[in-house]
Length: 263
Image (cartoon, rainbow, N blue to C red):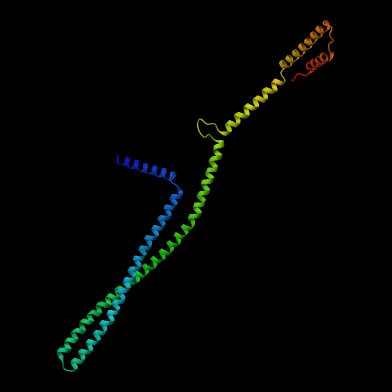
């Protein structure tokens, strides 16, 4: 059960991470990355400052120890000289006191010499660490400046990518469906062209239809008969009938009859 819960948790984390990466704004993420790089450089500088400060502190301790060594060494020499003078003057007690002081100075000299050797070793290590810290800061500074320089280039590329994506989306809208209930531009165009082609085909068939021609012939013949009847009425009434219109109608009827029928 515990193993299943671990797998489930890892799956959910991976899924949420994937969704976040898909929906995240690259411009915001870029600003976050630059801010993190600046903070990291700041922390590195602080750490380097601590290392360099330790080197400086060790150097100060070493210098103080050397100065004290020189002072104690001088005191020891003075005590030895004074002890020798006291013994020469027959002042055994003072000579013993000066000798005892000289021994104390000598012990202090040994302690200081040991301390100085240790401080020299620490100072050497601290100096190497400080140099490495300085180099790390310089390298990270160069890297940060490079990132800052690339920032503008990346923002420009991001704007170009957004523009190209908008163009691609607009082009896809013309050739792909924008929704289940909305036809595409291509579908509407094909539909209109099919309707136009069908209308043209129907018109061509109607113009060459035999039945249409027969109706025209019957209409022309009826017009001839009507004009003949009108001429007869005018003759009965003693009115001269104009022959030209009848002849024209007859010629028109003849042309309709002789018009070739389309195959």
